[in-house]
Image 1 (cartoon, helix red, strand yellow):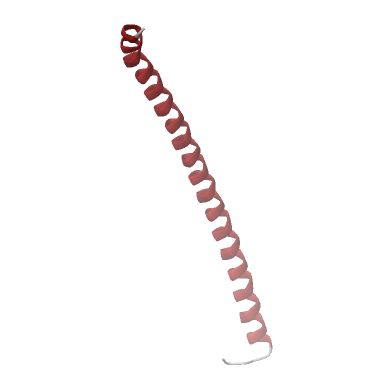
Image 2: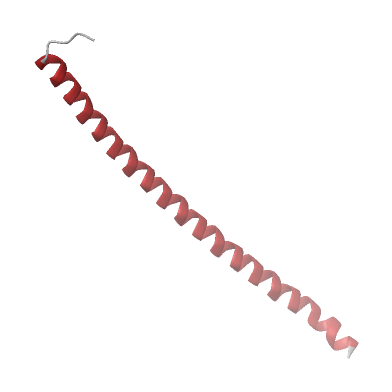
Length: 71
C-alpha cells in the first residue's frame, strides 16, 4: 500500500499544482478585467467633469460680461 501511495504522490502533487496555477491565472484575468473597467469609468468621469467645467466657465464669463463685473 505504501508503495502505491509513494508512486502516486508525484502525480497527485502535479495535478494539485496545475489546479492551483489554473485558478490563479483565472483570478489574474478577472483582476485585469476589473482594472480595465475602472480605467474606462475614470475616463468617462473625467470627460463628464471636463464638460461641466467648460459649461460653468462659459456661464461665468457670460454673466460677468452681461453685468459688467470685473472680478
